[in-house]
Length: 500
Image (cartoon, rainbow, N blue to C red; front, side, top):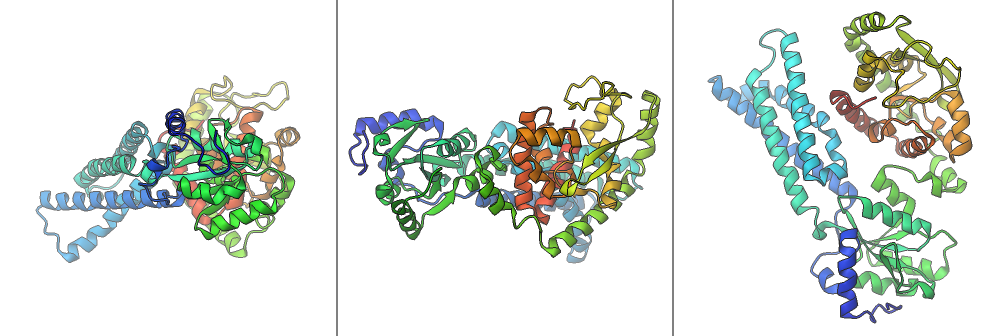
């Protein structure tokens, strides 16, 4: 069995553990396998930047190729002057594809060949449908007809080649980060579970570190306890560790602190378990956090900077105004169909809790039968809810039922992006069952949010808890850039009719 010095493990045991752990995302225990690879793998933000850069280059090349083929077919000469005229179309092509393709930056999708192919086919199909709609509604000569077809075909081909290259090259041991987890309690097991369940294998777990000598050599959840903090430096060097995850649930001893400082001096990153969990899942692990962590994490977020508040409000006003203008053509049609399908009101008003728990009336298109809650008890809606009308189901899948809430945004009761507003009855019930549930009221509610684009429709306490983890992540990391990411992902949901 492995002791403090890490030198007692036999060659036979090494290969046995290697075989057992290789499919679970656990690091090989053979130093000879590690030493041929550099210590530093790609961090999550580096992977995302790599994906964005590759997509941008692929789609830009597709746009240039499409315009070049278009000019040849039209017998035009691409001079510097004529190219400047067509630069606008190149920008429109690239921007449109990137917006439709935004969900491809989910690492789980980016790591799967099948999911990547399906998503790119979906994006290409959506692009063609949007093009045809605009083509038949716009004046003749507005669109470069064949150039759009050429662009969609080239963008699909180039993007697919790049993504398959990414999967073959960059999702490999050479670019994975090897982590060492300090601790063996629930926090350590939780982060190991989060790492090993991810299909993209961005991290490989080298092992646990624990000062309890009775645990040395034990295998916990498929991961071996390699030694104590006194051998942290030697273990990190032996297993070419690039990141140490601090997952201690009790008080840190002075020896452990010194060992971590020495690791930092060696150039090894040290990250706390909640921070890495957030990076991997986009959620805050509420069930494993205490009030002290909540205060430390959210105190500065209760009052965002004046610049962020101003920019968010301006963004909301401009976005809601443009949204209402664009929706003006749809509203009469939607209202007519709702009135013809079922008797009752066209719009539906319901009390919700806004920022700091202030109640307001949310406005939606009616999607359920009249008197859907005849017993007077609030009920969650679910995917196959029999109370939802036929046309109401279409409105929910397209998210068109939310269009009247743009008026709530103009009034300042809601934002375009934020945690979804909940009914007072549900809030009173959920805050008794879910830790920190009321913390989501720190932020102004939104028409769409981080939870809505990352998780299915919630219809239980368990779903509400998971969505709260996403909401708290948004509150902690809220920014204009994150709002734009959420809106782009929402556009993909709308185009593919993935709402409910």
